[in-house]
Image: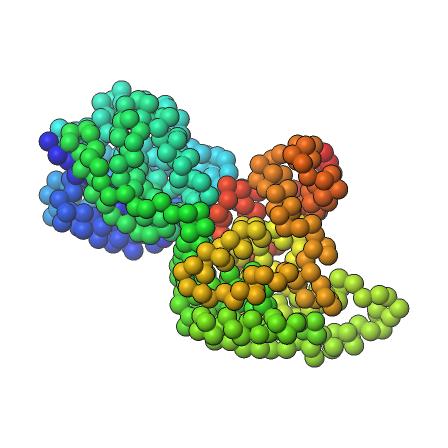
Length: 537
């Protein structure tokens, strides 16, 4: 007998139970209109994910229970449609990450997550208790089991479901994006679920939650490990997967995007949700004529629309004419409000104020940082006056080695490209220009410069970005030792220099705004090094 399972790839907002409930109901009705027998929503779809320390508040569970009952009433008229809803549960003094099945206005049963991740960006053992009880339910003669996200990253919970009679595994997920994550998901599901002969339906959350971006990319896989349906990347989506008994039929396959397209769409979604979910009316970007601010501007416009983006150019005595020209060119192409506020007079005033104190001392990074801090002050003043949030424009390479100024170019509320290495910045700009030509070519071909002293380039202070980024990736993302990096062919002086800069600039990163995570290890939730440390390799 044919059973139709709908994957509801939805964008939930943490703590917005009423809106999340409405969205689940909306997707359920859409699925029911297409004949769905089962509707699978993502992990903690009713509460949003991850709620973090909201899970320590009893009122959070009370609201969850209230809205779960309200949802059951909302969809009670949909006869025999089984809806799998993720929600937190407080039971006998223990907290659980749960998924319940609602049908005909009633709660059929609830599954409690078994495997609680406690690495990278996850710390579920801080909040939840584990349960070893499987939950299986029957729809038209096909028996469905439920596992939640991490449960399928080992074989225990899938095996328990199969032992309880499950023929198909339903997997609600809150799995955040990083590059190459989707292929990793496939590999793990094949190893832990397909190896048991179980087909699965994998419903992943989509949307931005602070620095985490959930990419969707939900899918269905048969018992041989073949992907037979694939949903969209970084978009809400709904797809019906038909089962002939326990065997899934081939469904719609969303096209696999190249990595640059995946990352760019991830950045756009991250900006849109951070600004929208937090209620900011608009954004401000300090435009420099360089590649980082150009990419940030392009992402912001694509995420929010030109009417919600303002660019401000703040030239100093060292700003090259081509920086002015390229900035003016780009803002015309994207159609945002653009203002030029020179900082020459402000810089002169600071110099005059400090002239006696600095008498006889040579100019150095102090004067460079003053310029950056003047710009940060101006951007924050505009932010305060108009309620717009400042998007910072620093990249991961700069953040790693401290090539950034506290209270200067680091000043702002959201760091769009914080996890984007400089070499990837260029690739993303090239990709964006394949969609439409918004970033002037000269921005991509001229040598990068902070323009804080005459004829300055980044490579005056840093190794070439190809070298810096490779060392950063091996040391920071892959936990490779200094000796291993040198053995890989990099000069010892470059390796020692870059790794030393990474270590001594932790204090800066702690004070930086949060930013979008796109690698498997970003400077944020999954980078937890002490500021004070004497450890040396």
